[in-house]
Length: 286
Image (tube, rainbow, N blue to C red; front, side, top):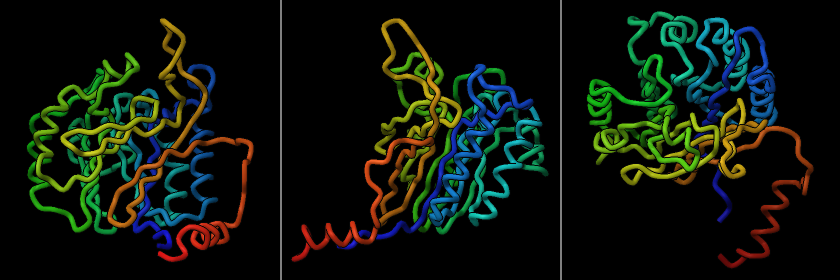
């Protein structure tokens, strides 16, 4: 009955929108400082983190300096954590600069940035849903064929699919218009495979849904929050940031949003004592 520790923990960092010159995003947000805060939060938790999932819009304007600034904070943190870094493209990213600065040695600088990573028996498949000069998402036929071939053989502990654009509708009009538009084709490619969860970003609001019976997680953004319940006739973004932890626990993948920033503490107790209290009070005879 004692809670099982995670068999695997991945941290999703989505939509950091790093600015090349250190400018404030929308005149309000120091996105590099927010990234630094996120990495500090992860390190201070001392959680065993196996991978960092960067799920798109890493740079705000796709400039090489933005990727260099991102890597200057991310790479040392990943090394300290002993975590593999997985990069995914977003619509704000630029393929040639993305590859040159983060994935040196890539053969075709303008090809979709699709990849496969193996982390503790979990296969992480990354699909590039971006289209140059467009904000919405789409997967090309060749990408879907490549995906089918890759998923033809199951992974020991299942597969996570990472794609920037959610294959879901959204109550936020802009996110709805700019979603992944051929989600039905992706669903057909995933039918009967071992994909256990689809991890996305892009919307700047946390959400979930499903595609072909597979859970879809829309992780919070680092840059700012899109308001899903604004006043009538308005669309707005708010200062605020979050990351996600994606854990494999008892064979099940679970996604949890983690808010960043200081908030008043309601309680701060010894973890072992709190678990023992619950076990003794409610599960003594089980």
